[in-house]
Length: 136
Image 1 (cartoon, rainbow, N blue to C red):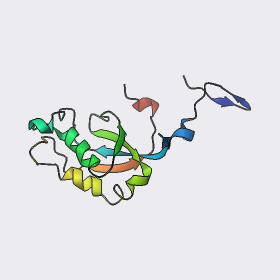
Image 2: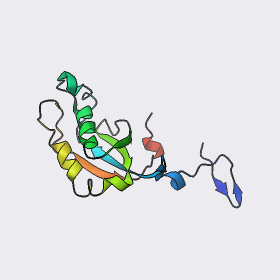
Image 3: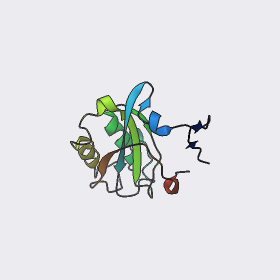
Image 4: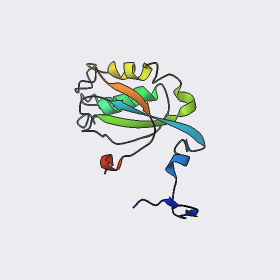
């Protein structure tokens, strides 16, 4: 159920997510989505155990080597995309300069990832969930 403001009446249970969208833990946050292009749901292995299907953890570790990850979402869009939350003041040009994209693409064929991720993309985004795209 969606609660709204009507005229001067303000529903006491209404939460304006737009107003709090960019401030968590007392810092401004940013979001970016990694589109691996191919499904990553089988890439759940542990790289420390020499798994050859450790793509998700290796991608997380790769991103984490550049910036602290504050949160991450589930796989979405047929298991090809994953969204991460980071501090906005630390993001800099890691997305716009393709640093993260290139680092994730470099994992392709490295021995611990069986999915083809050589065309992966990284796109900065706002936090938003379309009703039709709600993840359960």
